[in-house]
Length: 196
Image (cartoon, rainbow, N blue to C red):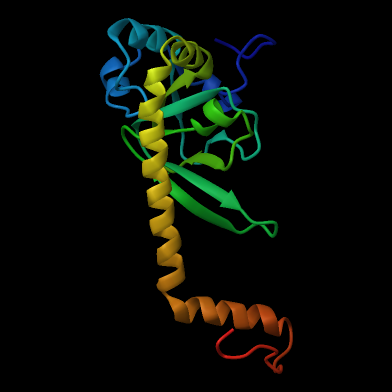
């Protein structure tokens, strides 16, 4: 498949040159929590629409803000999910490895990608378009309870990470805030109390 006007937006131009036409690993897809309750017929529909793409180290799978139309399952390698600040600093928010799924938020909220996904090493992804999944969820809405469970688990993980950021490594966060307050000055009067 080469890039053309009717091609999906999701494969990066670099990945298109490394397209792997072999059959998608259905066993891998069946192990994904988002897909594990699909019937055999539904799984066949999803797998028939999926592609396996290869990425080299440093290849961008998708960029933050990009319009989504697919999700990815890691078959091999490692993918960093990262956010960038306005000044260019990067923070890795998740590391995706074998069997992990990412890029699925747009399936449910229709918004742009919330972060960048980039290969940390040579990686192989099974890329699944949203369209067949949306059709399946519309046909069998009870499957969405599995999605609710997945999202609740992610929210619990986020709550835990937030608590860690609040309660761990206080010295480092305090030093950073003091440097921000000081700006370029060598000395400054601290305009806040110790408690603040």
